[in-house]
Image (cartoon, rainbow, N blue to C red; front, side, top):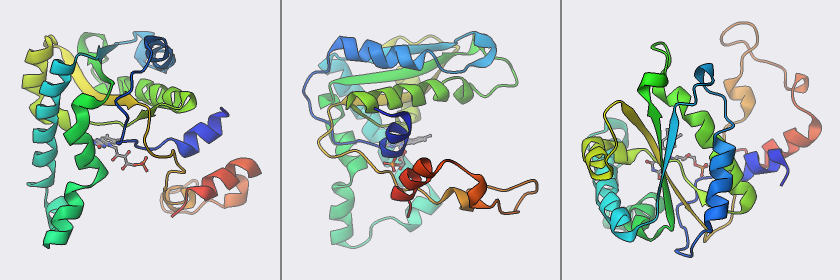
Length: 225
Ligand SMILES: Cc1cc2nc3c(=O)[nH]c(=O)nc-3n(C[C@H](O)[C@H](O)[C@H](O)COP(=O)(O)O)c2cc1C
């Protein structure tokens, strides 16, 4: 698959089939992950691959708890919280809820983490893992595997750490469900780049024609709101 096609069609795939994913493909996406940029080339990442059903079931409990905690106290989300019974029903059927309710059935979960002893004090831990995570997700996309970057499990970080035997000094970044998607990939929908790009001074627009080759503009256009 062409790189730009993978970028423009990689989106959060939360409905994943329980069908197994060969280890060879899991190695392939982790091999892609470990080629990412990282501070001082100390490669402070670890990838914990979880396939055991009972383990996934326990993580599902933490995940559901995390998801519930995100939607309640957060003011912004609360103001959008469903009110009518129909809205409540829709929320129950949302892709995020679906993933939470079926997490244990996802064939592979990959917990991506950072060894803090190998991270410079000025570097946020996320900066050391998310480039690798993006590589992993793009490689999965190229192989036809669905993924979604998730963080809600961090709400139960202490429990996750204890349950999986993750030592102190290791920062838990994200849990990536990996599986064959039920639905179709992208195009993912984003605001146009012009809305978020400035030239020389904050707030000063950058003319579009100074940008990417025509083909990329075309692909980007497919994903616009
Ligand atoms: C830092 C971060 C945290 C996220 N956490 C979650 C999560 O916990 N659960 C989830 O279902 N999606 C999560 N997502 C996925 C986003 O919801 C998704 O990338 C965004 O809505 C765009 O979706 P799209 O790529 O399908 O257009 C997260 C994404 C990022 C970058």
